[in-house]
Image (tube, rainbow, N blue to C red; front, side, top):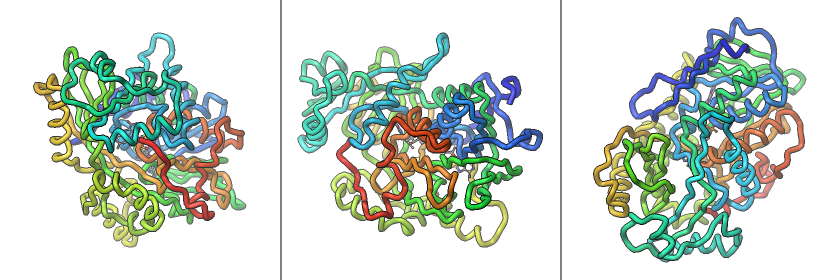
Length: 467
Ligand SMILES: Cc1cc2nc3c(=O)[nH]c(=O)nc-3n(C[C@H](O)[C@H](O)[C@H](O)COP(=O)(O)OP(=O)(O)OC[C@H]3O[C@@H](n4cnc5c(N)ncnc54)[C@H](O)[C@@H]3O)c2cc1C
């Protein structure tokens, strides 16, 4: 693709959708597919932050790449998230990947360009001894260097967050972690990939792929087919459905979480904070993204029926956390998933075109509760005006670790999904890992914990200690 061709189709907001950063660059639209010629080395399903970083790595390494997004770039999870990027508090199996991703976030941004990552530091506050125990257990077990994570004394906490009210039992500080504005990060990755000659198609759903002699040979989209040597499935919450159509089982369930964005607030904290029933992080415009952090919805959809057995042991282990955090509901998302199954047998357009952008209803009660708790802890938020609210769907695996894996029975197929609520922060390193897998290059990170077969080879992995 020539770099002049392209303009971002990031606009077109619907109700409850997060703001989008409209890049000055253009990306190819689906109608361009017909006029583009040529097979590619690697095709990618999904234009979220994971697919975009994979496209960026591959194209910078000189491979030809085509990425297909059914709706808007980052329109599902990747621009709806909090944007937190953390090295610490991860499951230890994920730690090397998280550490590498943080190095990449810190280095990201060409000279003169707006840097997506802001090393704001993150504070975790514990109100009760039980909450404190989760943090101290982690500190005790992994003893991180103090520039990565340390407990704060009351005096240190007061100095860092002078406006914080109420008595807190414990505060954990991660000075080098921070956040990137999600819309900016998505636009940044997309522009960089396009500049490196990745072909990026929006509003172009992928229906499946073809194989030749057992190997992936082409990707089939709603607007035509493109030959490819390898295919990366980075389709977020849709990945399981996509894989299933090709006889590959990927156990994922969906969980919905709500967010609100505030208007700018003068002289408020720059540090990101996770409190008791609230979280916040400052955006580049001086407004805040506020989440609950302790409330999510579990749609009672077909995934739960299909994969429930994979999650039972993990649920039992995490029951204390899950029962206060997750609310099962037969919500709009579950109903749509069930309806898709019914419509599948009746023909017509498929689920990927029917639901271009997942835009689940938000949970207003959890947002009110988060705001109320935030205002109690930081009264300066009393007068803050709410700009927008939305919800997003996370793709969760049984051990809360992503799947980044080749699929032995489908040569050329690579899965990058199931990021379980923390794929944004991992994205730069995850994109590299997926590029490695798609081009049979040895990765500098041990990807064994992320192999798909762990769910079927008797390993039965469980979520590890994390927060
Ligand atoms: C409320 C919320 C808060 C979060 N906070 C954080 C955080 O602070 N830090 C963090 O690290 N993570 C966070 N996450 C998780 C993070 O957002 C995700 O892990 C990450 O964005 C996953 O990126 P992705 O590219 O895999 O998925 P997505 O961004 O969902 O992208 C997948 C894309 O694939 C497209 N697609 C699917 N099927 C097809 C098809 N057949 N054809 C074409 N396109 C297709 C979809 O339209 C979608 O755009 C949060 C998530 C939510 C919902």
